Length: 226
Length: 224
Image 1 (cartoon, chains in turn orange, brown):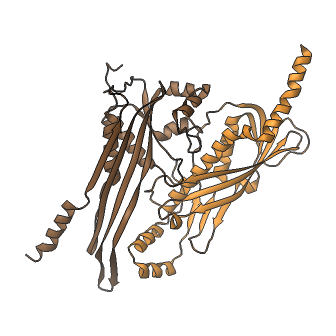
Image 2 (cartoon, chains in turn brown, orange):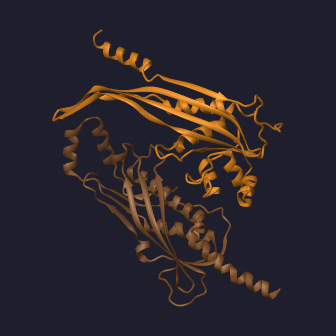
Image 3 (cartoon, chains in turn orange, green):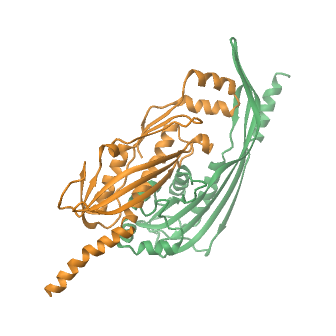
């Protein structure tokens, strides 16, 4: 995993240490003087998948809201967190689709009318949840991502609507900054999303049914030819 | 004499404190040492399926490094292994038992990758380190003329890990090692805070690494 491109906010960790040493008055004064926030541009490396390619030609529709997705959490009882997730999730989805399907094309909008693609998939991130170190009492973040994958056939007819959730947690307890810890948790959640996509795609009942229906005419024509 | 008293107390504390006790238990189904050919590798992987804790990758690296340097075994780094087999050993997918592992190896892609990389043994490590008790308090003050801290704080840490050795070639369990390590750390503040930190995780790594190493036949040109 590469180091996140982050604005390191070292004093936030110092504040936590001071709090643990019961230096609340000093903490209070410093907190009044300067606010705390965690800003991360998620940056991870996603490996090639060890799976058999599906003999399908697929269009992956990544619109601007997905490509430049940014999550901001401003709960009253914790420091604000801003997470630029778009670029990294585009990287992951491109990687997964390239490895999972025989042919994969990235599109910006859903094509109208008939085309040469077997399936078109439009992912959308519907929910992000965070558990911060204030809640976990360690420099450990937990990240939950929820995606909605809308699957259409080549004619633009809906095939499946797949809700997929993923989870990641900071693994190293001794990371130097909040940003590194949050980046690691988010990259783990994205890896988990990739694992779900790779292993779960064919398990979706609607997709399975679509694959069966798609193979049926082929088998029928083969039988007729004989 | 009076001036020397704090230093004497400090020295006593430094030598007597931060004590770590480590207990290592093992189970061997056979006394035969595990053979490892020169083209075969061992991989140490952390269990991460539990929601309550994560087996720290640094701890896994510590064991791997120990096996590689002291045991002279060929060890594949955990991250390299996880990336090579993505997504099959991600927390959601990793096999918890040998039966499931056997099923995975029947997949031609996974089986071929195992053979290509020469992975013979997998060592699964499960566990974590936690702070069990905290006590004391330290106060600090800042004044125009300077500042300082005064007080005493202590905390206990306990590490509990279990390692299970799987023979991927013959699909069997070849041994288990369990380590319990406990230690107390102190922070003494007389002006400036002075920490005395117990090496609980380091001791656990040393304990489990040394014992795991003893399961394997020494590597050498004549190794089978």
